[in-house]
Structure formats: C-alpha cells, structure tokens
Image (cartoon, rainbow, N blue to C red; front, side, top):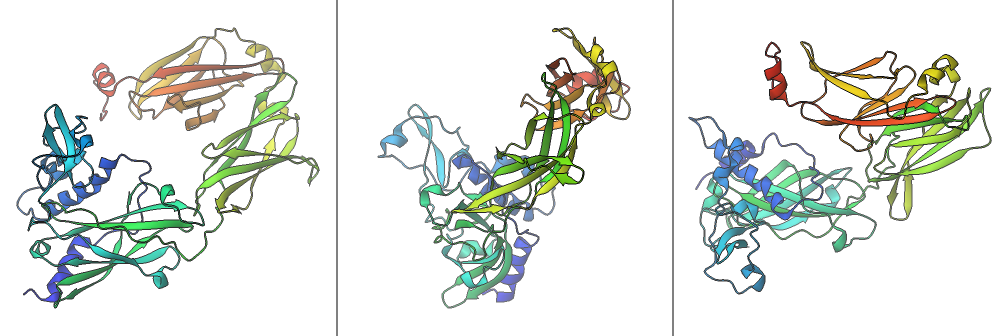
Length: 466
C-alpha cells in the first residue's frame, strides 16, 4: 500500500498553481461544457510525457474519443431521430457522458454504456457539501468524497462547476448554465479502512447569489460523469453597492437648429457584486459656484454606457453626475456619484469663421487610403472634399452605432485624419459630425481594411507579422 504522504504530494503536483476565481461562461451550448474536461484530460496526458514536447493543446482531436461504447439498441424515440448532431468519431460534440453513435440515417448522441465497469476511470465524487461556517467574505470551503480505486493511482484532476442566480429566494428555473470554477486545494484525507478520500477546497464566489455545485474526477482515460449537485446555498455576507462608474467624460458635440447645444456623456461599467441594472444621470446648470435649482435626470439601462444631453444653453457650465444601480431583491443598491463639469462655451465647438465652411453638400465624398508605415505597419488616411476643421469624428469597429468605439470624439484640426494601429481585414464605421449654428449634419461611412497577407505582398519591404 502506498503511504499517505505520496497521495498528498502527488495531489499537490496535480493541483498546484490553480487560481481562486470562477470563470464567466455566459450562455453556452450543452456540449461546450465538456471543453473543460477535454482540456484537463489533455493536461494529464502532458504530465505523463517526458521525452517529447507536449502539443496536445493544439491537437485536441487526439482526445475526441470518450470512454464507454454505444448501446446495441435504443428504445427512445427521440434518440432514434437522426439529428446529425455529431460527427463520426467526435464524441466531444455530445454533452455529458454521451457518445456519438451511428444510426440508420446518420449519427446521434446517446448515453454511453460500460462506464461503471471500466477499471481505468476514476470514481464519481459524492457527498458534495458546503461549510457554512467557513463561507466568509467571498471565499467558501467546499468538500467532497471519492472512492479510492485502481484508477486513483494515476494523476487525477477535479473539475468544479457552479450555477447561480440573483435574488433573495432560491428558484431552480432561474439558475444559469453550469460554469467552470477554479479552486485552491486546502486539505486531503484518506481513510484506509474504507478507502474513501475526502478533499477540501476553497473557491471564490459572488455575494448575493444562490449557488449549486457539482464535481467530476477525470484522468487520462476520461471520466464517468459529474456528481449530483449540492444543495443550494449562498454566502452569508450581504452584497455591497456597486462602485462609481469609471472613465466618466462629458463633452459637447454640436448645435441643434434652435441654437441649443447637444453634449455626450460616456463612461465605463464599474465593479459590482451584483449585476448593474441601470445608471442614473443628472445634470444642472452652474451659476457662480452655485448649482441651478432646476435639476434634470434620466435613466440608462445596462449595458449602454453613453447618453446625449440636449437643449443645453451656449456659453454655460453644467454639473453632471452619474450613479450605478443594482438590485438585491426589493432593495436597490446605489453607488456614490461620479461627477464632471461640462463646458458649452462657443469656441469649444465652432467659431463663426468656420460656420460657412461647414455648409457642405448632401453627398460629401469621403476617401480612404491604406498606406505602409515602418512604425505601425499600416496607416489609414481619411480625406474629404469638405474640411474636417471643427467637426467631431468617431471610428468604431463594426457597425454597432459606435457604442464600443476604438476612437471616439476625435476633433480633427486638419483636412486629413490619419488612424494608426487598426486591425487588418476588419470592418470599421466612420461617423463625421458637422455642426454649426445654422445646420447640423452627420455622415456615416463604412470601410474594410485590407487582408494582412495581401497588404504585406503589396509592400514587401515592411516587416509585418500576420
């Protein structure tokens, strides 16, 4: 019998270096959950390789076969339907322990048989429990047990997954898809009488959420399946209000026809224990160190992080405040206010000498040139028949109305605009805002940067890595 110390040392080798933060996976397809198990199996194969370089990260097709075998026949009407939901020999396109099996008209995912009798597979963990007394702050201790069989003599990884939902009352139907959660090993005890090993780990969770946990044990041959999920639980500490919004900016972007000013406010989402529901934006005119009694406010739903304020007076100062709001049951959690001063002074926008130049034609032409650059690789030069002086420019990746912008509120001072560090083979949207006291016009153009290989072939002297 191998001494206990070898179990402990061996497990430390397998589990060392694991961080303590859950990974967000969002809404995923069922078979994508198995990517975690596939990656862990790859790591185990790499641990056993000593004479050759480990390349299984880049060739996961070697591991596409799951343990178990297809059933001889199926009585399920649904499984008899040919959905072509997997390819021949690629079991990891099937969820859980299902394997890709051949039918009369194609391939379908079916429950594997023979997993219980396979001596090379580790046992399924059981008795998943949460230590409520040791769930302090955002850290929580989780434990499980597993039968020590012949397969446990090989290196074994544990995969821990959680699912959760926000709210004061637990609801099974509100639970999210299963998410992979990294953990830190705390202790491990082997009972020689029963050959049952208990593992205790620490994981990082979020406040204000209900959780369920499940565990799978996997070695280089595969796994038998996940454990039963734990009872629902939540951390004892209450969630805190979100932090103030980050990177708050407020700047004018032009005139309306009624001679009032329109301004844009942008920000970044802050850190928060609970998901942010919306933002409250407030603004008031500033008079000689005193704020106007007329305070205006509005709400912006997440995930939008910009807002346009209209009907502002020219040559004025405005006090702008922004607040993030999340919900914990019936209670609203509000961040402290983040504030900025907004200046609508006339010379910040356009002066009268520039106004006549901005009476542009309805069909203004905007041209793009892709030029080589030793420093940046490629420069994008934008020119127009009309002057860019006094205008505002937004350049955005894609056509998402510039909500996620790479270059925002660029105020050109020359007849040409040059952008650097743009991506190859990418669609961009350029919005040019021409505004004066008489007229407000916006031009939107879309262009696609050239493919890296073609651009490099046209400019062989450039050192570009594609």
